[in-house]
Amino acid sequence: MRLQVLPDPSAEVVDYYPASRAAEPQFSVPPSACPREDGVVSPLNRRSVLVLGTAAALPGLGSGTAPTRYVAELVTALHRDCQATKYREVGRALPRVGEAVGRLVADRRNRQTLALRCDVLIAQAKLATKLGDGVTAYAAAEEALRTAETTDDPIGRARAAYWLTCALLKLADPEEAERNAVAAAEVVTGLDPRSLSCRGSLVLIGSVIAARRGDAAEARRRLAHAARLADRLGRDGNIGFSAFGPTNVAIHRMSVAAALGDPDAVLSSGERLDVDSMPPGLLGRRGQYHLESAWAHSRRGEPVSAVVHLLEAERVAPELVRAERTNRTARALVEDLLAQRHPRAVPGLRGLACRTGLLA
Image (cartoon, rainbow, N blue to C red; front, side, top):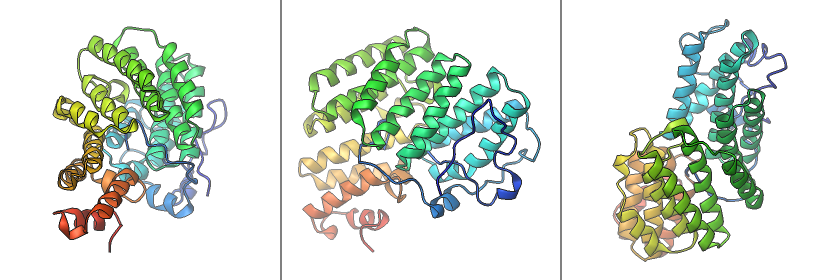
């Protein structure tokens, strides 16, 4: 089953998730703010939709139009849960929230309801990216971009462009992803916190893409630019669910070093940051710090330290390590460690291998 995105805002949206199809919603479902580029991934199959897209029992969402503020809080909750790596919960709630937004747009099509539409599409693209579904992520991000353009919302455009970049990476098109990120960042020129956060996020993902193609100088130049933006912002924030701030810049510095194959630089960068300074809900970012550290220790032949970081990643963000569709990075690391050592030779490794599906 090909998952569908929210219809065009100029079209009828009353039939978006009709009650007769509530048991089988046809909504898309969107290891890090910079997802790994691991090739083309097939769209989610029917079974995935039924598991992750089951309509959640959300109070206040009946057949009528729910209050705008209530729906806005539900959309906010989608983004918070996604950042906390609660991907299954997001997948279950997303159809009903999408339905509620569709009804709002049909009933009161204005800047506020269209902004909510853009927001829920971004959540959709985000979840699809985490699940490795580049096709759905691209469609949702494109539709979010079009929605933002109808209201001339530069921040909405920038946020949608970020997830369009992520989707292009999932579709194994790093050149287009980089062009998109650079072009989108160039037009975000404001110095307000939202603009700084959006531009900074786009510059950060551009730095990782540059590192993956081996351009260390450009990657570091972009990191320096992002660091200046973070310094101007002045705090570890989560404006627009961007997670942008000095600590996230430092985590991306680790990601750049990993992409350049430099484990020593990964660990050196990691020693200088405190992930606990980030807002408490950013568990995915904390988990990514531990995954990058685990990779570096594995490359240095330090399996015990690698497993310690993998276990910590599992503690703070379980679905980054255990969930079948979202644990590709952790699974690859555990595979490497198993190749280096017998699973019983390193405390905790066998349990990790079992929980990631590598050992029975």
